[in-house]
Length: 172
Image 1 (cartoon, rainbow, N blue to C red):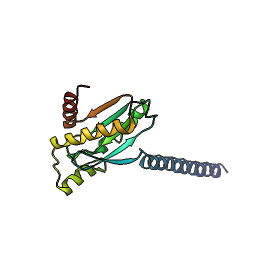
Image 2 (image 1 turned 45 degrees about the horizontal axis):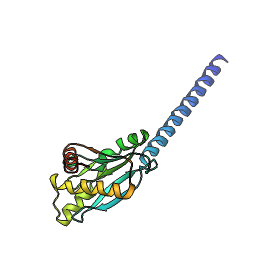
Image 3 (image 1 turned 90 degrees about the vertical axis):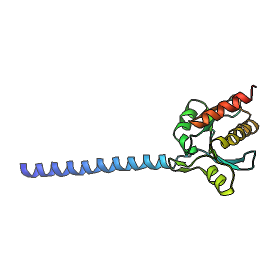
Image 4 (image 1 turned 90 degrees about the horizontal axis):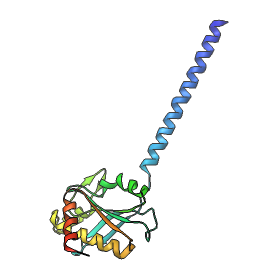
């Protein structure tokens, strides 16, 4: 009789353990699916001064008339994907964001630089220096479309220099 109770307890523990493992597995996959399908916003396009179509991702989580807007520019050989994890953190701090593909770039975090691909396909200049046109176009687009109370620019590597160039050329 005692042996039968031990077997019964072991069986119940095994079933309970299997249930716990199954529950943890289901929760893990639900979290994974949630992260993979998270809606970071809308992908938009606008034109640079030379007619090149620029691709950008909007992370607009706040009223555009009251929240500061951060334009995010990637480093060389990357894409707007550089900001897929950073932009939502800025959103949590009260900022709206636009992550912009510049014409000098490639892919990062699974996000292809569509602007760079179009520049190469259309024979447009696509060096890091040429991306100055895209920075200016993004600033003009942000101001004319959203009229933010405060516009900030965040650069990574060479795009930081482009931002400083635009700021130096525009004293207002």
